[in-house]
Image 1: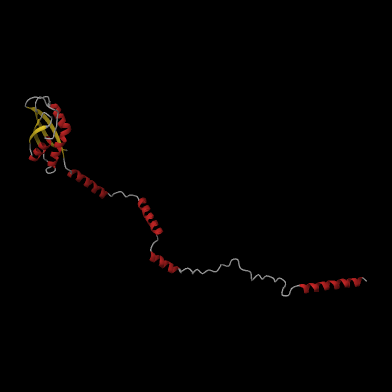
Image 2: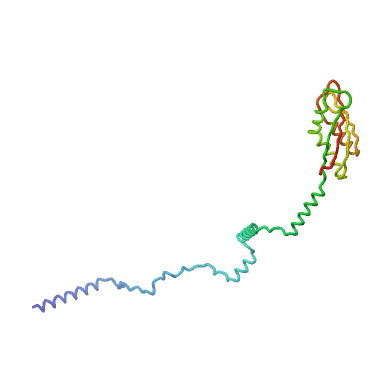
Amino acid sequence: MRIFACALMLSVVACDSKKAERSQPAGEDAAAPVSIDAAPSVDAAPPTDAAPPPPVDARVKKAENEGPSDEQIREAIANRAFLKTATKKEEPSVTLRREIADVKKSAKTTSQPSSLVKVTIKPVGKATSLDKDSVLRRVRTKYVSGIERCHETLLAKDDKAAGAVAVTITIGLNGRVTKAISAGFDPSIESCIEGIARKWRFGEPKPTSASFELKLRLKVDG
């Protein structure tokens, strides 16, 4: 009896499996195993249409034809400026120092001499309210520089020109010089001093015009 029951159960299982096979649609197979060789490679580079880089020789020739770039030019200028500032200034040689000293000495000896003027005064004619001391002080402080320029003009032609010049001036009631007469060692000095003396101005003399004689001693300064 037990053997019969077991055989019955086996027949039922076999029958159910046959029914399941008939119920599966045609063409549907079991999932096919995935092949490892067919899987896409992760490291594979995507295809590209870019042209391959030119050979090294072609790139070098192209750079030579185009010349240096802007960046290379700026770098070269910066390096040149650095070297120029970094280079220590060389001391002049002994020969050069001697030449410089000789030039300075020559310039000093060939420079134009300057004038030195000494002035004395005395009144001429009647006494007035305008005293000689005030006239002499004004000539020394304000007008002697013009006399020196007249002398230095002559020194430019003759560096040893020196001597005495007498100048007689007449001062009018308004304080201006109305007349100037000079006598000296050179006609150019006389005319020059007379011209500037006529532009001088002093205090107003009273009650009449005043006359003074100036004694000028023109020397070479130094």
